[in-house]
Image 1 (cartoon, helix red, strand yellow):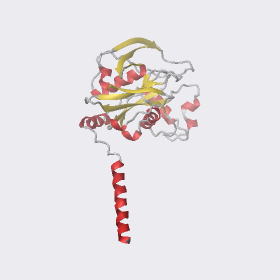
Image 2: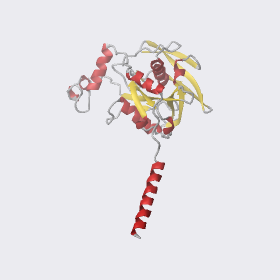
Image 3: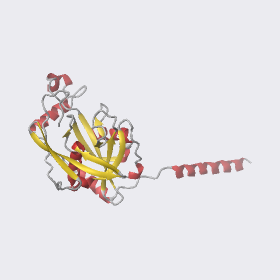
Image 4: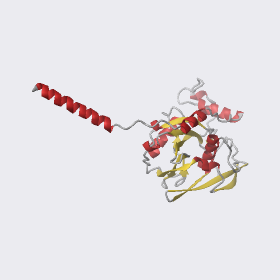
Length: 283
């Protein structure tokens, strides 16, 4: 009798084990040769060096740590603390998340911001936001924000490089972070309704092609520059991708495809103004 019970118990345990194994998610697919080669290419990318004045500004900004700076001086000893009137831009990061489409083309994940937001409401943007104290680096900021905004698990994203900083309309220093999503099927978008109205994707190469594009010339602090507008349609919905997001994607596409855009870019590097007020924004 005991022997029979042992056989039944062993059989039940084996059945539970097999059920558990069959219900486990399959391992993620290995990266395609193209994505693997792209990751290797982008890891070697080095942003153009900033000029001496901008480099000094960034060094000072990074030195102003919460407790002790990277160069070993407390915050109170940095030039920023000694000159509280001088403007220092806050840091933010956005995620340029690339994956392979059904036809093998590289695509990038984009969002349409909620119309209820106080800034850039209803505009197309890249997932991202301001750096927080617990973030280890810009990649951590970008992937954390993407997780909060659209439910993109950071473990699915292979961060491979960062691009040079961009200055946003509201004078944020925005760092574009390029990451690769190997298993697109594992990403099930969960938009945060407080921040995101829609999640979609677009071909990256469109941002260096002169198609469905228009532009406007503007001027700020004596510098003329061009704002680019790209019209895009996905899922019977029309999107306008412009401004900072378009500028970042033009740069990202140029780096990924290793060729300049087929149009005049004209986006001079603005020097951060020394003194601003709460109403100072780029036009």
